[in-house]
Length: 404
Image 1 (cartoon, rainbow, N blue to C red):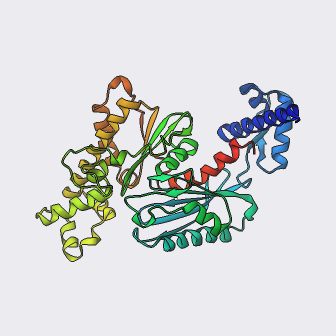
Image 2 (image 1 turned 30 degrees about the vertical axis):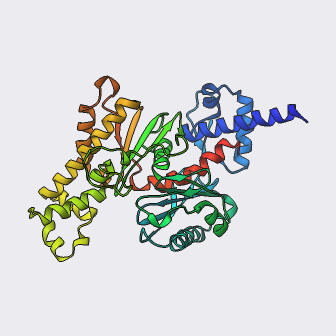
């Protein structure tokens, strides 16, 4: 066995990974800058850069300012180097996007479904969306390194099985990875939605440059993803981050998970819609009352947020109460884990900015001041794109870590 040759190949792959990661994080950048800021020699960098350019993974993007002599060439990631497909499966919507090597969605598709629909119906919608974006893009299939699927938990990412998602009962115990791989003919990675959103914010969004973060998705449901040392923390076996199903009100309403008083049962978008109906039936004054009288299901989360933007008192109070509950939960996280940052996304934050201000005030008031700084809590910068970008990033991460 040629152990010497094997070791040489391993070292070279590691160096390729270091250089490509460095260019991804700091590009455009020169070879000389990389040599000064890594432990690699200029010769090693020069050889690997030539290879990566020939393979189409990086490209020359211009020239830096000269300090005497020829201007040094600037290097950056080639967006067209490789592509991935990201799929974000939420309670009623499928989003699919073709993601380039810079993490940007190139083409996107969206489809709505009934969360209790037959699994075959949901699978067909996913397959159609993926095939559609690939066909529209004209990108050769061999340039697409895989598909990432983000789904609400709980799920088993190792076996690619969605287990028992409370808000999508139609997908209980579905081996979605194997089904999609057979239908589409590409490798699929399955991961919890909040985890991939955390990964997206770490690579491209509000948490760039950090290593230990928590992402909280405040949307129709409430979930969170955890990243330690730049790696998704799945827990043992893989259920970490179910913040939405921690009890926050002892005698609270029943949650979809079967427990009572969960954060999701009192603070999620679903809880806000339920409370709006209850308050209107009690006679609360609101611009939503006449709509509710005409057809109850029209009063959804979007209409409540829009009413709050018009200073409707009921809508504002419902969102404020939700933000207070979530702020308390975040204070508990700060006191227990003290991450570098907690990034909050989802429609409650993205569509109604005062929501973030309220939860931030509560979270900082109720956590030890010595455990946090004012910048610990951050809004998502990727917003509604975090899910598909993060799902696509799963394969980019695997591609980079494999030695390319």
